[in-house]
Every structure is written in structure tokens, then in C-alpha cells.
Length: 424
Image 1: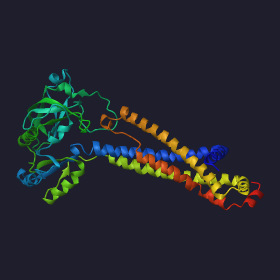
Image 2 (image 1 turned 60 degrees about the horizontal axis):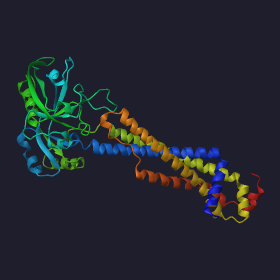
Image 3 (image 1 turned 135 degrees about the vertical axis):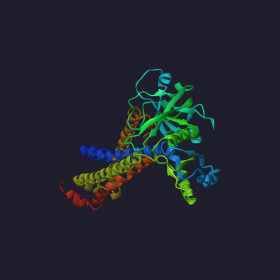
Image 4 (image 1 turned 90 degrees about the vertical axis):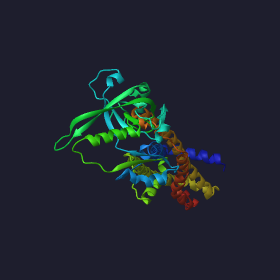
């Protein structure tokens, strides 16, 4: 019997039990859709974490503390010519300050406080610069974030910001003046501001704060400027315990090299700690993966059982027909092929349906990300991977074959004379 005949007979037999077939296809498709959706989300988040979070400057900067700056000499000697190290610099704590010439800079009178958060400029920032550049050993200059918001002073969220960002390029050439306080905490319940100093910097360019996951008010000033501000605050404030530890920043070229550098630092007596660590997005990815695959597996088991039982029941109802086919010369392999083709057709319909639905879901997911999630998540892309598509196709073949085993076993043991005698 030709293959076309097998297809035709399988088609007729599937139509005879249309409701059951729809249920089988639905269950099987659901299992495959959950699997593909889970794989697409997991892979998308994995790529996003690896390329757009872990490899940002903050996540590959190691902080090392020591009693004196002289104690860092071994680090400079060990890593001065290491190609994995982009920059090494002395660093005091980053700080946020209020802009005091806001009317001049923003062209409006307002009672609101406008902020910048001063970060230390280093060579690793250069690839993120969109316009302008920082000249080494130059003071009182800085690049602005491309998407700037002076009233934002907090952490990055997941859902879309309900604010209008300013274009950092509009501030190129302008000078911002910030004020930093000197405190008296000696014997007082609350710190009292006893004096203030100002620091000014000229905006000489913009950098991509989305790609580097900076808050929208982060300004990169020269390291010596930031150190000056922190030392001035520490030296002139009253009632603060002296901070004897000093910090050194080591910027690694790629996150994949961070652990190696940490181990090499330990070998020469230093403990390197990451300046920034990944947030809950990693746990979200793991949760999606585990929950998704468990639901997919459970649904797949139900689908296999349902297809197996429904196929066996249908074969039992066709006992007379099968007995007649055997009586007129059909071999077991012919009838086995018929059963396999039927279940494989269920599998292929399920695979095709799951492809169409899963692809549509990824389009909807990416539209949701684009229009509803924060600009920092805009590089997250949910895509079906080739290996997932191939895996689904393989499952779409294997599962029907496994599901037909009970029916095939029944067919092989069925004697023509016995089958023809029954009235089922």
C-alpha cells in the first residue's frame, strides 16, 4: 500500500473521532507551547543578563580596600600590563548632590530639588560615549547621560517610567554647579550642616546610560574631582570616625574574566569585591525555567497518556475492521504503519500549531516589553531559538511513536478469526 493511502486512511480515521483528536492535539500543543515559551524567555533573559547586565562597567569593577594607598603597590605591579584590566584607579565613595544653579541650567524657576550622582570616570566608560570624550588628567568636566532626569535618584525598576527624560546632548557646553555639605555630628542626635562647598563641571559629551544600566542622573566626573569632594567632606566634618581604609577600583575587560582576577588578587593577599551585583532578575529567570519546564513536563505526560488510551480505545472499536484487513492479506506491518501515521499526524498538527502560537506569543511579549517595561529592559528580546524548534520537532515525532505502542501491541496480538467473531 502506498504512503498516500496511509495518509488518506489516517485522515479518515482521525475525522471519525474528531472530538478526541482535538483534545489530544490541544494537550500536546499546550505542552509544546509551554516548553517553547519557557525556553524563549529563559534564553532571552540569559542573553540579556550576560550581554547587557554582567558586562556593564559596574558589574565588572572590583573594589579592594587597604589601610594605605601604598598597600596597593602589589596590584599595580601584578596587573599594570595585563590585557584583561582596563583601568586601575584610587577611589573614594560615589555620592549624590543637589544642583544649585538649576535655573541657569534648566531655564526655569522651581522649588524642586535637582540632583546629579557623581560616578568616577574610567577608561571602561569610553565605549559608551555617544558624543565628546574625557581628556585624562583634566578636571571639572563630565559626560551627561543621554537620557537624563535630574529628579530621579533611586534604583532601576522593571516597568516603564512615567516620566519624560531630558536629552543629555542639550546640556553639552553648560556648566553645572553642585553643593556638598560639611557636617557636625559631635554629640548630636542628628547631623547638622555647618558649612557647604561647591563643585562645578562642564558637560563635554553624553554617554549611553541605557547600555551601561546607569540611573538617569549619573554623571561621570574625573576620579581626582570625586576624591577631592569626599576627602573635603571627611576632613572638615566634625564628629565622624576617621576612615582609615582606602579603596582601589580594578576594572576588568569582560565579566567572564572577573572570577580569575578575584582569585589572582587573593593569591597576592587582596580581596576583590564586585562594585555591583546582579539583582533579582537571575532568580526570576530560574523561577521561570523551573516552573515552566515542570508544567510542560506534566502536560506532556498527560498528553502521552491521553493519546495512548484514546488510540487503544479507537483500535478496539475497529477490531472487526482490523480483523477483516488481516483476513484479506494485510500484514501486521501495514496495520502498524496505519496506527503510526495516525498518531504522527496528531503530532505534526500539534507541532505546527505550537509553532504558530509560540511565535505569536513572542511577538506579543516583545511588544509588551517595548511599550510597558522600562527603557533599561528595551534590549531584552524573546526569540525562539533554532535548537528549541528542532527539539520540538523531535518531540513531535517521538511522543506519537511512544503513544502508539499500546495500540500497536494490541494489533499485533489480534487474530483475524477472533476479531471477525466479535460484534464490537
